[in-house]
Image (cartoon, rainbow, N blue to C red; front, top):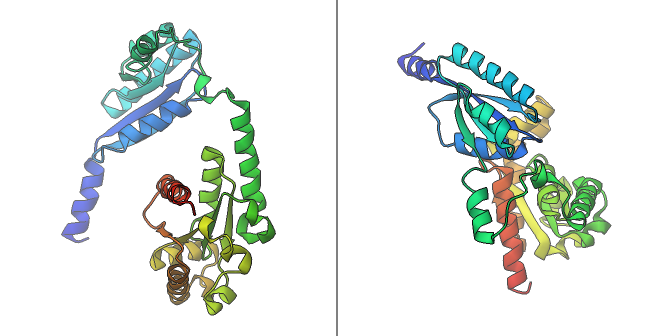
Length: 288
C-alpha cells in the first residue's frame, strides 16, 4: 500500500465517531431532515444515525436515554440528540440524559408566537398533518400522473403536464418527476430519448410542441456508464462509447431546440428540482 493510500485510510480510521439520535413524538421527519442538514456541514466526524419516532410517553423517553448512555459508553463520547419534542415533560427527560440535546423548535416557536400574538398549540404531528385537503389531493393526483406518464408511455397526455423532462436512459428523469409531484404537486412527465430521436436530431412532434415545458437532463458519460453497468453489465447499452455518443447527440439536440439542459451528475434531486422551478417561473414571468 502506498503512502497516499495509507494516509487516506488512516484519516478515515482516525475520524471520531458520534451517534446521532433523531427523536420525535411523531414521525420524526422534521428532526431527521433538519438534523441531517446540520450534520452535512461537518466532514471530520463519522456519524451513526439512529431514527427514533414516536417517543411520546415518559417510558419511551427513559428507554431512549438508556440507549443514549449505551452509545456514549461505546463511542467514548456523548451522542447527539436532535429532537422535535413539543411535550416539555418528555423533552426534559431526554435533555437530562447523557447527550448533547438540540430541540429544533425551541428557538422558533416561542418567538414566533410572540410576534403573532398567539399561543402555540404544541400538538405533535401538525407539520405532517393534512391541514389543507385540497393541497394534499393535488399532490396525490400529481404522483399518479407522474407514474402513469413515466418513460413516455402516453405522449398524448403530455399536454396536461406542468413540466416534461427529456433525456437519455438513466439520466435521472423518473426520480426527479416523482420528487416534483410529491413535494410541489406538479404534474411531471418524462420522455426517454430514443435512438430514432438521436438519429433524427429531433423530438417527437407531441413533445416539441410543448417545448416551453421541456427540460433536458444530461449526465457525465462515465457516471452514466457506471449506472447502466449496474443494470445491464457488459452490454452495448452500458458501454462508455454508447454513453458518450448518446449524450453528445442529446446535448446537440437540446441546444438546437433551445431546451434548457440540467446536468444531474453531481446535483441532488432537490437541487435539480429547484432549477426546474426557477425555469418554470421565469417562463411564466416572460409570458412563454
